[in-house]
Image 1 (cartoon, rainbow, N blue to C red):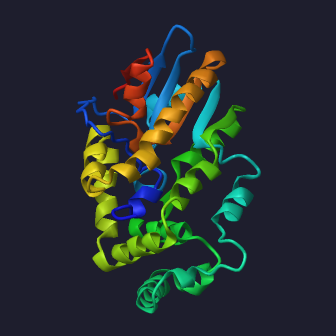
Image 2: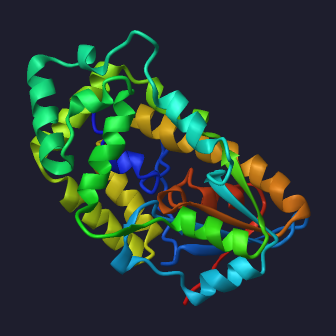
Length: 289
């Protein structure tokens, strides 16, 4: 997976790129209004999937956009009663497989020592899971100590209180399949690199600062640099998914005013959701503070 690291799993962390990068120079905001002749006015909100509680806030502009919408659509419908079961099932290795067989003794020792130090449990506790499960655990350690908050879960709770239906632009299989296309050995190499570099928390904090500044182009540039021109990985994890979302957004907004909430890093770039909606003929207007 080369430069695909923990930030990739914070499905904030996903930013669209393309073979021909086009500077967008978007205003600094995580909230956008979507308008068009064949849809009801909807809103696009960029999230960061996990964030320290001290940095979490739902701004008034976001609250107003949510209240004016009839329906909520996330990347994945995490309110689906089958979501957790499907996630666990799809995260498991095939019967008889062992995660340990995909790593060398040295790699096992590095990861096992780190996990025990940070979480109190070692690699053997994840031996029946795919490497992406370890990546999610290492992601949590990168965020640092203290209580965490989830925009997606908060929005789901808001939707429940307001009796708004929640849907998704894709399912959990779509996301996990994107990981599965990389050999497990390469995914392990990435995990070891994360631990060896020891800069995961610093990288997360850099991305967080872009998010708090509502700088979607800054997030794009940061990830483009960090991914080190891994065009194949960026296309598979970001561009392809963004492009698949546009017709689904058109369908959802045809009959409902929708509040869309997706990882903020999906918004910027030539193949980001903002620009793709514009290319599809919609007016996408930044909502500033």
